[in-house]
Image (cartoon, rainbow, N blue to C red; front, side, top):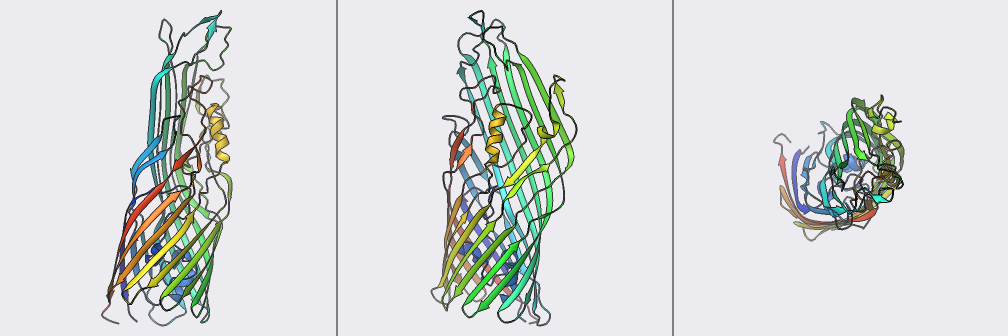
Length: 496
């Protein structure tokens, strides 16, 4: 048997944005990447460990593949993300998702094929901040018809958000060749997820009275958790002549273990929460704080069903795939217990909801199509297109509106940021030599103008809304482009 070690390094110099609510941001495997990812139906690549384990029976040589996607992210802007004229911009450089996949060498001919993979399904970083300072007419309080803070007050509002999400997956697959046409396979997937999240808001107002009284509010949220889950994938493949086809079912994940820390602090000083224009101003001080550690965590992946087909002529391969993802109903990633610190002590606070971390996914479907053509024995050209729809659940928009009213109860946290659907196009080519290949490609990605809730709103702040304005829907525009460079080197062992 011939043994080959394949080393594939794929560099992508790109203005891009990894997503936290998308399943198909990254594609894996040397051929699948340049085709846009339609690998469910058969590309004879050891990355089938990830896409459809049954296809491992079609891979003719034992190999190890390493591919890396380097994304440079520049100037991500959410229009009016902190209020009219206050765009929210995130400048970032993402981490490097690395894929290692391969087949375990057979000592003798066998219908069984074993494979493995280490991938990065998700890598997302978002950092942004905004600040506004100026004069705003906020206090309307009258005392016997006399304004208690005449004119506009000095106002400062600012917010910051910093979130980092990463997933690393190890997968082991086994495939069995039933006959010359049919094969089945099973992949065991273990995914380690870690998420660090911090968001801070503050507002300050100076009253126009003799004491120049300060009115202030602030809220901070800090979440840090990890979770390990398991999900099996069952695959079926069919091959006949120039055609191959496959179906893969990814079952809902099973929670293994995880722990996390969650902290939240809400403070208001001298805030006139229930103004009465017929009476003197009454300032209220409120403080609610809690931090809980070593909480058990749960994170869920949905049921998904994928199908694909590939046609291979002498010089051309055409492949297409689609995958449907089921929805996930509302659940808690972390469920705290106990009572928070609160002042006044008579305040009615539901401690579970004060620190509760929610998640849910809507159902989405993605599809991909790609074409590879051999110009001659040494040059292949490839192109592909895929959708990448967001599973962001709009149920949280209503909860964000509740937060504007600053009702501390019924106010759980949600960490999702992106909510727009994306599209990817890849154009590239492979230059082949006896023992090495050079791949070059260009990647284009863009998103529709999906609605996203403002991160904050400093327009028309009121004391009833904690010195902030009402958050409304706005849009986020996204475009990316990149250069793909790949290198493949094969080394034959001396004993075969």
